[in-house]
Length: 478
Image 1 (spheres, one colour):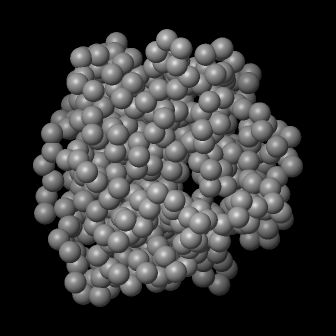
Image 2 (image 1 turned 90 degrees about the vertical axis):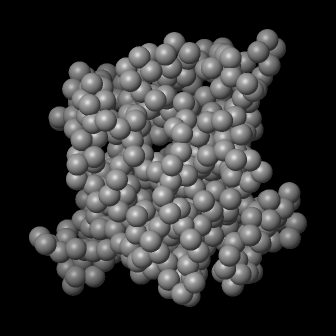
């Protein structure tokens, strides 16, 4: 099945794990724009929410709609705790992603993606997308399949060059086995390692009809856009053109890395996307990074864009998944002008610059970071490496330096690294508990976070997704 949709004016950004969860995506979609769920770490998100008791029953309602009862029953048996776990009790972790995933791993990942998209699409006829990271390769195939089972309309992907994803979507829509080539450090020349997924095997031969979602890669340059348009293994349906002030992972500056006096990467003229060249490709595109005003929306349209992608304003609205106490503090400090964002060239184990909001009691606080035991137990950003005997291993620059070096990594690669995975889980209230202490949060935001007051009406201390859209498109029917 193919997908034919009218493109939206506003795309809600697919932000850090569970920040752009289904409540936010649903709210945006109901308003006639593209709501997007984050596909990052959804297996952990589902498992931990079930362990918290699923008090409102939304997760179990979505799970009951999953077409493969045995998988759904197994996940509930493994993770659901009626009434929720005790606050001081640790979460049961999910299986780590590997090149040879277990049936339980696949089942949880497919189901988790299905649940998030199902809930985002439930009860309205709007469109919904899912955002994935090219750098997190191992969960990609089951996540895409689960999202397609739930009827996802768009797939967005950044943090890399996702040339194989269009063909993967084609293959899944045809119910075929699919594979993606894995980035393996130390692989011999001509050596190839693949992650594979078989819909027929997962569904035990009876694969439902699947719609092929539209694919929008996130790019920072005309060169990358042209490469993806010409050399991908299937159709690219448009682009999100993201500048360096956007939150989350940023593309590194072109050329040798240079830092300013504060230690942030320096972006120059070469890093400004050449919009005319992107426009000449002939595909729709959306501008992202600092486009959250009516004037910037008009500017994007004047350049030929179909619209804009908005992240940071939605990240701190009422429907986002960020903890309420963090949202309150961020909005208060945005109002009094004391917020700052640091583009950290080292924090993310991916090697991409990462925008970190500077807040006390978070991992941006050096004393909090230094007091945390370095441990990698969620494993999404682990690097795959080839051992001397030809087998594969897994290591993360954010784990204990001794463990990383023991696995053949360079100790200098561990300097300044932060456990993004555990930090982002804590940001949405799902942080692991160790010795009765919860993991500290890590909050990412774009430079536009200092302007959140534009979405607040007189006397308000919070705002909704509808407030964001109403500000951007004043005549919108909210």
